Structures are given as structure tokens and as C-alpha cells.
Length: 126
Image (cartoon, rainbow, N blue to C red):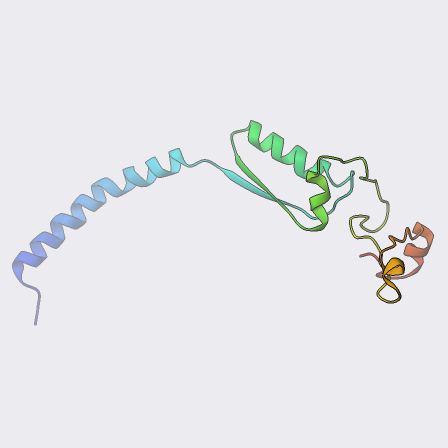
């Protein structure tokens, strides 16, 4: 059983009209599209603050819609008081070392592990 002549005629009209309109509409959409960029800030150190902020400000100046996602370690970069930000040659100071055992006062101490020790133990702060 085939399609009726009326349906074939309407189908032909629709296809012809779509062929006329669709390329123009697609070009309009492409011309009006705003470029966008998403950046993930994963480290909360001063030296790792520059890449996401410089890239995002440059992209915004060029007309991009920019979003920065801050992981938990990167949240240090958006605090009002940034005086505790450090430049770290090793590890991530946004992840302080806490003791998993002992009394509460002992577990609450932030241990500043020297870089020599961090470098000597593979995977300690990576």
C-alpha cells in the first residue's frame, strides 16, 4: 500500500521549503553563538591560581562565556582572606596532613611535613 498523492504532494512541498530555509537558519544560529570555556581549578596554591584566572580573564576579554569550577582543594582561591596561600614545589598545601588516630587534639593538628620528607615518600601528597 503506497502513500496517497495528497501526502506525497505535501511531503514534497515541506522538503523543498526546508531545503530553502534550513541552511539560512543554521547559519543564523552559528553566527549568534557565543563561544564558551570551562576551566577547572584543582589546586589551592598561589602558583596554581594564575592559570585559571589569567585564562578566564583573557577569554572573557575576547567575548567568551567563561565558567570556573573549583574543586574542594581549589576553593582556597576564592576565600576573602588569601594570606594563607602558599607556593608549593611539591604536593598540595590545600590538603593538610591530619593524623587518622589518637585523641581529638592530636587529630586536629595540621602537620607541616617538610618537602624533603614528602619527596622521599612516593605518593605521599599526590
